Image (cartoon, rainbow, N blue to C red; front, side, top):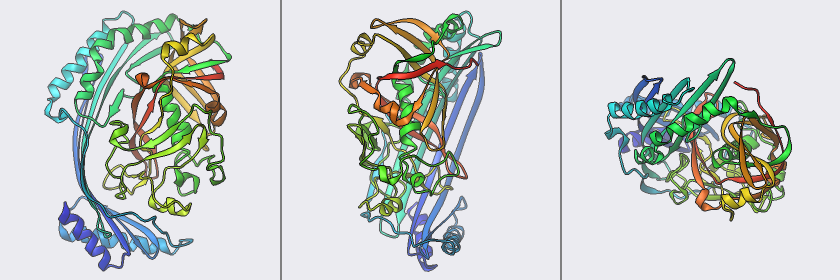
Length: 485
């Protein structure tokens, strides 16, 4: 890998680049799924290539190849310089990077059990066992389960002298039970919707999820939803479970704090942001109990946004985003940090793979735990709704007005969870919603959830992000009934 990067960097400088970096990425992926007693999908893929990013004429250029001969790598570097010079003809000003020390290091993510050491047959057997437990529940019409594993080895080098070797495993798994009755479809997922739980760990994550042990309960809830009352409409208190709160963070905090959206560098996919620069350190984003960080460090947890260094060679950091309710920071790259006068990037520049240019991406955007136990939180709620597991979401292109639907809800009356409710939804305005938060549960209830399918950019890049959350209460939220599937 070192030779490939050196060929690219040396040739880029010969072609006139004032700066260049190269990422050599070797990745491996496996997906196994089942559907109603049969294996649905088994796929395995491998990818190896190099991406070269340069500055020439004060503008960026990028090119990539999976032909790793010296001639091809040098031609790719030359192409990146040509693209930079072409881009320079339309630039408004020379780009400048915030300073960063050149690091030489090796980082390896946590992995107790190599998922690729497990056989596809054993993976399928686990999922078929889950499937069988789901379909033992009378009324379950459709059962789906899946596992996904990825190993990424990356070497980053730059003309500034950085040489960083990183290796990490990403694992995920989960299942869903569907119950059909006429035109109505109800669904319950475990441990989360959209594929389950995903983290920067090995097969030990899958073992910890206890998929088969939870299948019967989840199947019964899916069937029970068919006969449940519809969620009532009105303004009342709302308690979100940690997985739904994680998605709320993703959509109404994570995306709007991406500084490239704020500056207008990225608008084609999902729009820009209401967090204009005048709001930095002045906006009351949430109540005093709302504290949110962007943290890619392993100390924060083994999330999908955990790494040693980002794709500019900047070390993972903990950056304050919301501090006691006040908006205190964006997530940045070396270029965008410089544009707003920050002395350093906070290490949030990442790419989907070797053939994509890095973009400002979420690391682990998490709400810090509060002081409440879950029992105390429910007991202190006179009338409200508990909602869990996302079913749908909608938010405008400035990330300000939103509506979310969940798979299931329970009514809270007199401090107790009572009847099951179906098709719950809630809506609001981002800052009003976070300012209505009056309680966040403690560390015992906190989970670092993985969102594996975050899209951004054109051509679109799909990446994983992490969101730590514990259940939280929001006062006076507009609650209603979503359309049944």
